[in-house]
Length: 237
Image (cartoon, rainbow, N blue to C red; front, side, top):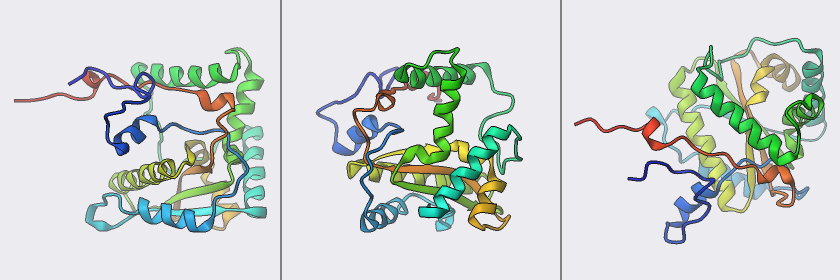
């Protein structure tokens, strides 16, 4: 078995089955063409994603497509929160606290890859903040989804929901679409619930931007590596 597999250094292997090649080539898309995603295509993607494994077949999680005035209101409210610098109590901890140095290095490397592709210097605080704010515009994707889960679920529910979301992103990639999960949306759960009229029992997990990628956009040239297999796999005999 190879010691390292990376989507950055293995962009295409002709003899791999199509599904495996698709998984190696998938990446986060942060710039989209304006073309709308037809409802019939979205429905097929959702039905495909729901075939993901689920403990007890509970199929946790709900997805909300936000459009028109509702999307404008949500984005405006979230950007106001960002500008106010007043933190909200998140529904769940996305990152470990404190962040171990090994994981912090991966996080920093990911940011360097993103801002490097954009030509934003490390000391360009305004440029970095402007790019981060695009999370709350769903990167101007034609389709914006808000992902929620019932508050009564434990970690297992989040695990099942994550598999479904990955299935959705792979199904989108198979149809030629790009996508980007938006964890930043979970930073302001109260705002999201208020604007969308959701009860406290609906925890805000993330957002999801979906549409056809603008391949000419520099931000879509971002590539991140993956940790060597030796860091997260072992054999015991």
